[in-house]
Each structure stands twice: as C-alpha cells, then as structure tokens.
Picture 1 (cartoon, rainbow, N blue to C red):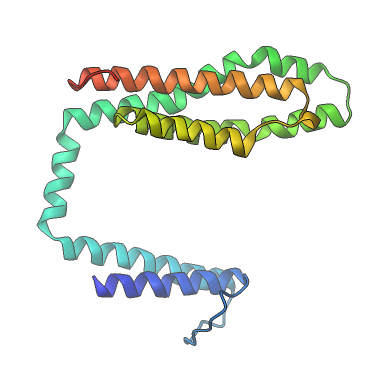
Picture 2: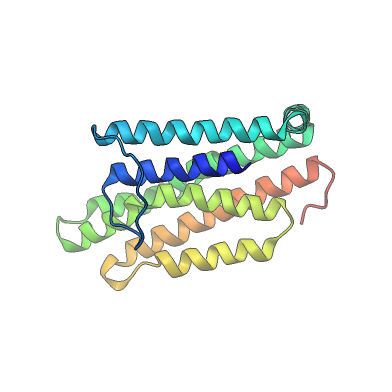
Length: 199
C-alpha cells in the first residue's frame, strides 16, 4: 500500500506541475519532464492508474470476491437501478415541471432581468443531478436527516436573489420539489423492494 500511496503522490505532483497552478507553500524537487504540459498530465494519469492496479493487487482475492458478490447481488441491482431512475428520470420530471417558467423567461425582453434569470437557470441541471443523487443515497440509507441537510446546503448556496427575479425563484422551487419527489419516490420503492421499511 505504501507503493500505491507513493504513486498517487507522484501523480498529483505531475498533474499539478502540468497545470501551472499556484504552489501550496512548499517545494518538492523531482526530475520533471521538460515537454509539454500534456506529457506531464499523461505521466500523472499513468501514475494514478498504476496506483489503482497496485491497490487491487495488494487487496488480492478479497477484492475480486467482493466485486463478484456485488455484481451478482439483486439488492445492488435494485438500488443501482432506482438511483439511475431517480437521478436521470428526476431530471426529466424537473424539466417538464419547469417548462411554464422557462417559457415566461424566454418571453422576457432582452435585458438584465432576462440575463440574470437565464444565468441562474444554466446551473440548474448539473446541480439537480448531484442533488437527486445525494438525496437518493441518504434516503435509501435510511438517513432522512442527512437528506434535509442536502436541501439546506443547496438553499444556502444557490438561493436566487432579488436581481435574479421572481422567475428564477419559481424555477428554483419547482425544480427542487421535483428533485425531492423523484428521490423520495425511488428510494421508497428501492427500500420496499429489498425488504426494508420504506422510511
């Protein structure tokens, strides 16, 4: 495992060296390639891949046995399917539910109000995927209090302001409600299918 840790460290240094980003306040002197940043990135990725292979090799038969058990488990298949339906099917539900609001925003005259609302909406689909995934994971694990924290964090990080306008607020509320419905419905179905209480 020490070898895998060392490979991850070297891969991180090579990746960091390729980006040319600011230092972390310390310096490590390694023979760095003098070629293009793409070469450093490739070496970094190779180090990460080698670290993963060393880790799997070190774990040995235990990893292979666990992987086979997971692949053949009906419970894992049910929960994975419900997760995919929640995340991606919930996205379809959220888009369908927000169609009237998006039409109203499209109908606004060009100007700062429309631009602010459009800017707010642009981040919605990606954040919705993450939100539904986290909500589903916590709900299927039987931790609704953690799911509530996800909603609280989203509200703090992404609440629309007055400059976004009322349309952005409506879009936010309707999209969040659709995501909660999708995650809650699919987590309850998955828990029921694998023999757990629905909540």
